[in-house]
Length: 347
Image (cartoon, rainbow, N blue to C red; front, side):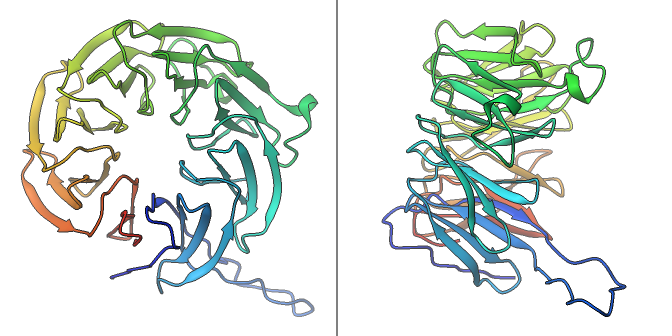
């Protein structure tokens, strides 16, 4: 499958992607009503020309596109049968995933740079230093908000949530983790109360989103070039791995491999238990994108215009595909195809 979809008129296209497969699965219909509409798998792309695109994955055509009030610096999130996305101008939207109709919006008063998170029948979004747990169908209803947490610094990454061994016993005790520009890694509970915070005293701000894929450990990169591995129970340090450039790439964890890119033009695989290097691969420019794993390979983009496919066992280059622009977007794997946005204004 080859899809080359031209996006907008902006000089730079961020192309932050999410794919959702929407199909009608009901086989027996009442004869007295219309059949429900069928939907093909849909790719949603955020761009810095203030447009959110919905693209038919099978055809490469637009299903719809909607102009929003501000640059889109985060992944769109599908939750509660809607798309949620925020802008750098501070507007947070709830959008009909089928039509692109804006159903609701709220001005949170500060830049939204991370993706929203579905959590306990609420939608969590960070704007500036505040983390909100909003009613997903009534943003303005403050009485139904789960909490509003105010950090000491701005949040420019995406929050995540996971059970924590010894702290979480059921879904409502899932702990929320996020990072700030003043070098804090923060854990809060479902009431918005701080469980712990870790301060990287020699840090230069967190843009990397924390990875918490088990109940014991957190991995995240800092702009000081260090990758931090913390215990999720109390925020204490397990190990710290140092590179030679800022780490804005959000790490992934696969079978004991922590993988991420750095501004030092190197992609790393680090042993999750020891913090020792397993392998590295060099590129021709900085890496700010977050990798994705599929079928024993890891995929990522670089400012050298290339998409890379790397064997996760030994770091062997399987292939690389050149585009005609910087690659700063996230990437999606769907049915054996890699989807990625480039600054050449194409997906």
